Amino acid sequence: MEGVTEWILHEDRHIIVVNKPGGLATQAPAGIPSVEDEVKEYLRQKYNKPGGVYLGVPQRLDRPVSGVLVLARQTKAARRLHEQFQQRTVEKEYWAVVSGRVEPPEGSWQDWLRKVPEVARVERSQLGEAGAKWAETRYRVLAWGEELTWLAFYPQTGRMHQLRAQAAWRDHPILGDTLYGSTHSFGPEAADNRGRCIALHARRLTLRHPLHGEFGQRCTFIAPLPGYWEPLKELFPSLREAAIL
Image 1 (tube, one colour):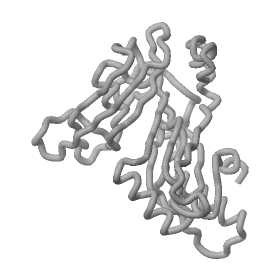
Image 2 (cartoon, helix red, strand yellow):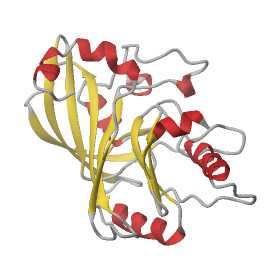
Image 3 (tube, rainbow, N blue to C red):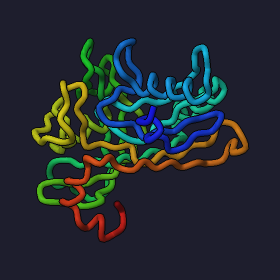
């Protein structure tokens, strides 16, 4: 399980925090690779567990998205983490590179959205429409490049495809996100579209530790960018100069 070992950002008796690879599902049906199954196998081998391994999944990242993901090794930890996500006390920061020049340099995107029936996609909606859910995202421009913008997203709600759809609806699709209209290639080649990556990375996660000696303490986990972001870094020298990267 060398690959999983490289993902781990933090591990104790109650939680395990990983840097999820882009192109890998958080959870998936039997026979399809997923973070959940890979981490379970890692724990089974590391601790020589002959039976099943419990692993709670209180949050998910879309398959093409990389970054910090917290998992629970005990049911009580899973319940307490789930409560934090439900109560929106978890602080999340994502990094994204999008098409175009985003203006103004700071702001908030607010929309009603709904899931398209029987399709893994959302569409813009209106208050009162069936299935409509409120979505709000604060953003900050970290740098402008030539026809590109490097953004930090701070989602205030947790809707399906929220960041991806809201960016696209403002004519700033995330690089590589062909589902929402991007025409830019991004990341390594994949055998099929399900394994493709997009330029969206869960950079930082801050929450209260659910158990253990750190119970109640605020913990922050930061996920380094995948190596395939290197070509993008070269397009934003100001980020290196400001020591943001």
